Length: 324
Image (cartoon, rainbow, N blue to C red; front, side, top):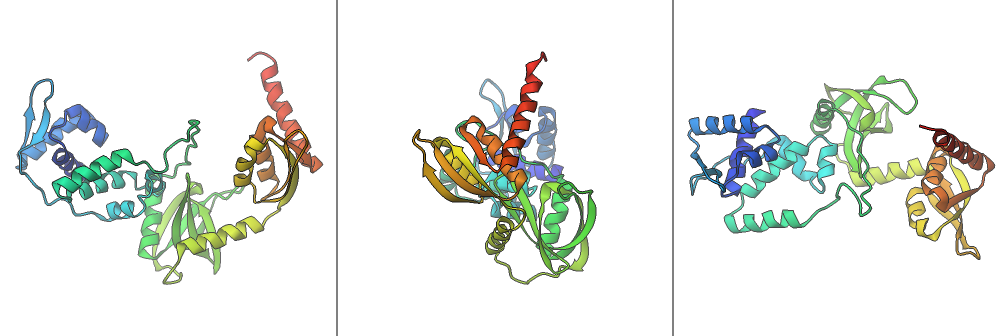
């Protein structure tokens, strides 16, 4: 929305002595031509913005100019609530709202604390996009319009219709009572109640959503952290769990512990490798986890798992055996 962009432009100029059109375009994620049009619009509206020419020139506001534009809108306030990480805000469709909300928050501070806070933002990073090995997991995207509809229903306490594609099932519509939203690493989930039963939906599988005007049939108060722990426990202890005996390089032990549901037994062999008995959620989980270990792990039992990994490895080898 252009009005929000004009506000952001003014706040950017308030925070800096001057900024070039290129720098403003980069911050606002628009073209330099759009920035120049916005500058003209601000000037016509009486905002004392002027251009300084030369190598270190740019656009600036007259000294002493202040605005009353620091009031946060609804989405910006929500974004700051989930601002423990930028990915958390993006998971719920609030990435741009977080950026503009933080600008307003900084602008509301007196000059000295604002300078300190601005420098602190540059020097502290929570939950970066990659680890030290540059491994990056691309989050599964949900359309902004769908996220906004879900978000409104959760906050307003309204029932919700979602077109949901469960794993290996055809998409179908469901009417649910939303309880809350949870972001876990690169994934986001909707906790809800359907037909009196707790349900957990992966947001990336919601194809469409419609907020209804009916009040949600949900508890008035909720401890979302506790609700998530309880549902996680039920997930881990349900399903077609499988127990696997494997041989493992000690260097990959922590990775396995973070992937498996539980380590049941562990011993060290004469060559230094570990002999470990672990539990996985289901056969797919076991195959995936062992495949990630590559040559650092070997499934000893059950036999069907060894065969599944052998077939997968043979298929990959065949793909690379002959030409391109």
